[in-house]
Amino acid sequence: MALPQRRPPRRVVEEPYKINERIQAREVRVVGENVEQGIFPIAQALAIAKAQSLDLVEISPNAVPPVCRVIDYSKFKYEQKKKQKEIKANAQKVVIKEIRFGPNTDDHDFEFKLKHATTFLKEGAKVKAYVHFVGRSIVFKDRGLQLLDRFSKGLEDVGKIEQEPKLEGKRMIMFLAPKAVAVKK
Image (cartoon, rainbow, N blue to C red):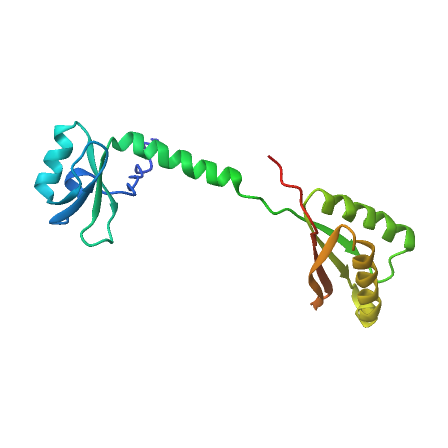
């Protein structure tokens, strides 16, 4: 006999703003279009909102008295969501590209990786360059430092050092950032 499947409980979405009867203050400052602005008892403020077939929304709960706006709540929520989406779209995403070296990296490999780092920096990405020491090669820390210094000098025209080379465990890490990123519109 199979047991009946249980549905997960529905998640109740918590509203970010208190509206209408959920507002618990005794007096509120009422603002909005086509509304007499001022401080009113909550019952009178609700009556003003109902008279215009709109909602009373608590915008600033920490103010004394709390500020409430007479607006259409669904329209207000839509505009807030739209603003958040726009802010998120305009935020610049930081991309970090990694380039790995060994303490005995050959000149050809070095030039190849330098060319890749140049393209990454020109595209606006940050570069994390590191020398990975395997086994006993950790005794060649000075080679790793020289390698990263040579790498940063090769990228002077397109990037600047954000973090100097430092040893973390078996890796010597250095961060480079692009010098001037063209703003895309």
